[in-house]
Image (cartoon, rainbow over all chains, first blue to last red; front, side, top):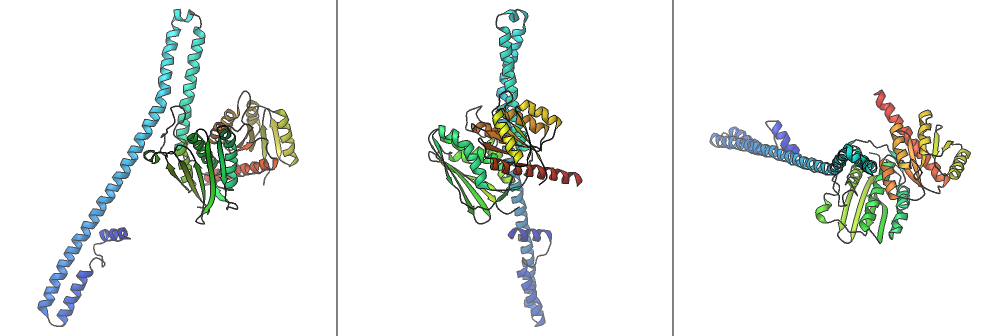
Length: 310
Length: 135
């Protein structure tokens, strides 16, 4: 509201709200003239004039400050964007550099083997084959990274279908359950019955659920439990909560877990894109995803999805 | 709902025959085939709306087949069928555009429900593209 008023004052030269004192003094001057008191009328006019100048000056100052503030906001957003791009590129560089280095080494080795006398040595063909295989593997790894990256950048518009979220989650839970049981991880269900059907993109939501369950199992390692809860939240949203008894996420990492390429898994085990893809999917579905965690106790991911069509 | 065509891909021939028979009995236009490569060859010649694809197959496995299928026919929906419940293949499958996962032994009514949902999605997708092209 304040901002709207300030904007108006900067666009129009005269705003009665800000000049109330001036108007009052001017009105008083008119009244005093009417009563024949010219001296006081003149004084009132002077007061009105001074008040007008002061108000105008103050309004301009406020408008200017406001402008500067929005400039600063803009700069802040811009610098955050740059930081994100910086992090993104260093992530990509890191992910691609490793396979590149391996490919470089293997090509050097192939060059060496291809020298006529080395080619005659026993086992040379087998070694050549090995090197080639390694190169093919690394090319595949790079392909996968770019594929995921494109997937992240591409604006896949969701296709909305009504879904029974309890059923959707249960299907994914069953997929995870067998492997989890082998690691002594129990899956506990706290589904609220008779939830309204949620307009969503079912395969995209499945991707998110599977990803979170997979992360939860990873965080637990061996022995523990994942609790899946669903409930109606505030009448216009369905809430899905996934709690694990895993290692938890330290506070300094919690702000970054949805950033692309942020991972705590050892190199080669995760690209750090799972949660950022999940985040962008949930946002596209009109929902929200949040995390709460305590180191040593576990982590809870909560997703809220709107029930009404957006 | 309009008639649609379903392709089942599974190397276990007994399972394949049973499921094709059961779906046909429910008036679903179903074709069965026993390998990923053969399925891809068939897709060159005939259109299908929904594919049920086994994850674990010798030769070309389910995930590789899924990737190739999505390249060839991006609008066709693919439901993965899995007996061993591997989380890794689940994550990959969903990532490469699978519609859903069904655990073996699949309950026929559940499978039918998912086939209908998958077909509905394909129809929605086609409609959207049609709308975009006419605007």
